Length: 398
Image 1 (cartoon, rainbow, N blue to C red):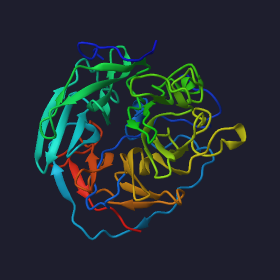
Image 2: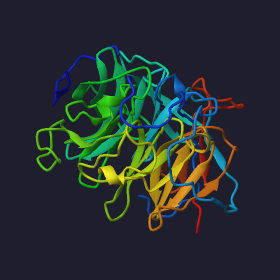
Image 3: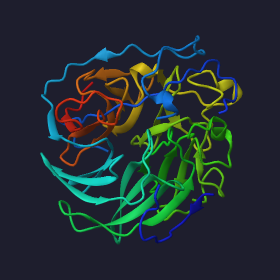
């Protein structure tokens, strides 16, 4: 069962049937690593074992909108490596002048304070890692009592989110004892989602994957295959689509990132199976069709179609950020940084193809640049010297 609300613990606990009308399914999925963008504007704001690079689909995929033809934009500035030598990093969160980084398998939380300056803040106890489980998403929130770090991880009793008070100051942060926000969420070796973030409404949004239990994505009583919305204390907001449920949207396979535009519109990246990965506009109570629909074609049945789709080999979209009304998407298997204008989300531009390998996360850094996190040491990439790393890249101008 899943439990909500604050519960002080001495440490974090140690860690399909196919349904619907999806026409073809061969094991596949995606995962990739991340980079970091430098030269930003002053305003900033995996899946069954199929997540490894799969063989070609065994059958013709269902109808889907063709991926738009990307354009190429030359970038005038030379990228720089902020830090190197990270071990299977997964998420970044800005905390003052520092950036906190999670390592999936080691369960360490690191603090990056500048070029080649990194220190260990702490290790999350009881994390159970697997192909796609372990220490995953991070989010920082400030309140009148000080900053707090929210941590998504996989334990022996399921996926959970915990809150840690951040003591000290930037460059010397410490972690307090964990308080449970939510635990007992479905978990698995694959498709654990893992992204968390605070929306402009101050609520905590949580992505939990279908954990390879595809029908659960359509079950409103299951937290698998959902985006959840909670208060920072773990309560259910009364204006949720169902005021008795944390479920904000359903019908998801494995959401990997979300971000909000200046007008409050929420966008999310999602892994497909064999045929189409997705960029979605998230609506309260919306049903995005999995496992009945992969890609487009679900609107006649009341499902919400994606804004844009790509074949998994060209994408596997992970963390996203929005800067100057540009959605920036880190791609794993695609090994590319993709940009999508908020005003025209059916188009995209590819940058840095194959330059840094798999890209896991992207954020607006504390120095006014974009930081991108690579993910080549998680067992699915081909590490280069110094991997994994945070790279600072210029923000593209269109």
